[in-house]
Image (cartoon, rainbow, N blue to C red; front, side):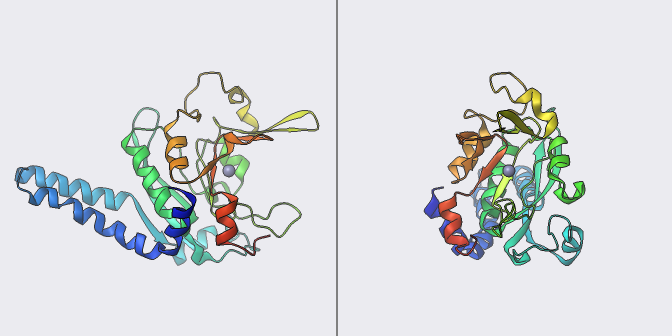
Length: 255
Ligand SMILES: [Zn+2]
């Protein structure tokens, strides 16, 4: 998806969300075609129902808000909670076992992110954990050290009133321990998470590695996201974000 499409998706966000629910209904026309046996039809319908149950988007409920308030939704959070969505997804671990995942991101990217996780799941792409960062007390370092994948965590860019991209829920980190953030600071290498040192060498072979041949890279960039591994002044191999040019349209006052 190109940048214009991303903006378009936001404008018609409600419509896109409504279409999600009917997409599975449309899929049933295969069954009506008569080429499947009734047991195959039942299986197809059951599978469609499960996908709908396992991959879904909701608004932030009151119960969930209580869980994130003062954690990822900091007390000084200036992003309206109505801009956020909860995603329930499935993902596969390294051994191919199915696990449940939860994340919170901006409504603008919710449908894209859900579709990306559906494709990753279908392709057996390994993701170790997709837990709410609130389970780590909204501590990014603790979440990354645990190789957790997550999106929304409110913060301002230091010494400004500008909300960071994770603070807007417009950035997502995947398999964080194996895809660290790396920057040179005063001639010294700075790595987040601190236990990600073995994975700074991107020529080495290890699981969960994101590079340009990687499916997560291909899907996120196809949906219009920018990859932190493409940056020149620093590398953030775990990180996919909505480009500045799009955010400037969505949040023109975020300066
Ligand atoms: Zn990130």
